Amino acid sequence: PAGGVSLRLCSTRATLEGINKPVIDRVIRVDHAGEYGANRIYAGQMAVLGRSSVGPIIQQMWNQEKDHLKKFNELMVAYRVRPTVLLPFWNVAGFVLGAGSALLGKKGAMACTVAVEESISDHYNSQIRTLMEEDPEKYKELLQIIKQFRDDEREHHDIGLEHDAEAAPAYSVLKTVIQLGCKAAIFLSERI
Amino acid sequence: VRCQLSPPQRPLQASAVLRRVSDEQKKEPLASSSQQQFDSHPTDHQREQEPQGPRPSYTGQGGQESEDYESEEQLQHRILTAALEFVPEHGWTAEAIAEGAKTLGLSVAAAGMFHSDGSELILHFVSQCNTKLSELLEQEQKLVQLGEAEKKPTDQFLRDAVEARLRMLIPYIEKWPQALSILLLPHNIPSSLNLLTSMIDDIWHYAGDQSTDFNWYTRRAVLTGIYNTTELVMMQDSSPDFEETWRFLENRVADAMNMGNTANQVQSTGEAVVQGLMGAAVTVSN
Image (cartoon, rainbow over all chains, first blue to last red):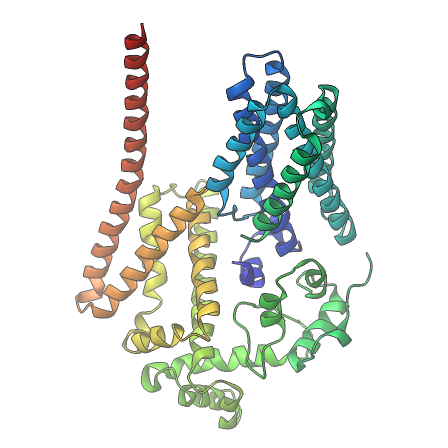
């Protein structure tokens, strides 16, 4: 309930005094949804390619996403942010995207990873800009977390490239479509 | 931090200007301006900060300047609080507000600041009750943290919280059905829904809810249903001290707890069945 900002801030929550609740709400909600989706994407990829040669590398990236999600779960409770209603949808859509891209082969899975991780890094970068413009001191902890995660996602992106993502079938089409989907997901999760 | 105030761009209402000026002076964290840039849903904020016409906003309790100067919104809150005393007699009407204004030494014309259907009075009351509930729950939580009280099991916590909140209606119970119907008027729905959802969220927060998945919604929806139905039962209840209502509440909360357990059981059964089928499939394929 976005309108309840001042009312809720006036209830006694020392940790939340002085923050720009609507902005932080959105940031945490969309990031939580993003990490949740990323988890499901890797889960889908592992379901298909788990026993292949790229299995271990995908598992490793998945483990990092699990850690990210855990962190956002904590932040969500600490800042009393509502999760996006679309979570069940991202649950399925993420898995389908992961499994679908993996069915295109190892390179297809890597291409999906490159596309998604690039979108997420850009998204984290713009959040970092937003928070820096707001108040770098007040949001120091959050900024640190997002910067760290952005670096992790960048690393995943590079790993994808190293594993011949660009040689995937219809790479540029695949990449564009997936990135459009990510943009839509970010837009929706921020708001609903 | 770059200055984000841009008063000329926003339609100025008296109280909003007053509040923003003192906000700027005190660098109050609730300043509207910093939210303006990033919130692409400014409507809710504008409702808080810029009441249409002279009407106050209830989804906000800002404007708590400690300077000698009282903002229009603070004055309105004082009048409405004073008016509550007259509600049992006059209902949620302009008469009650006029009487309230009189006790503060103001002219009865002050009631003209408000809508004639008593909306602001009711919303003010609801907002006040919610704040009282939050404070109560916060204090209870402190006692538990200090070890001076036992942590209640969830069902009892919910029951006690809902009961405490509904008991605040008792002095106004005769006129409450009228208030409920006014709260359901289309122009009041956004505010009343906001107040309801904030209250339910507060109760779950203090109950220790830490869900970050769809359960967040399920729990709040269930509790909202329990609250609303219990409120309606209370309107019809003539038993001493509303015993029937509290019993109804207890049963509904118990149902909700069972629903949670049943959902878990269904899931476990489902998983067991799937495993059984997989085992059968493997056996058959061999």
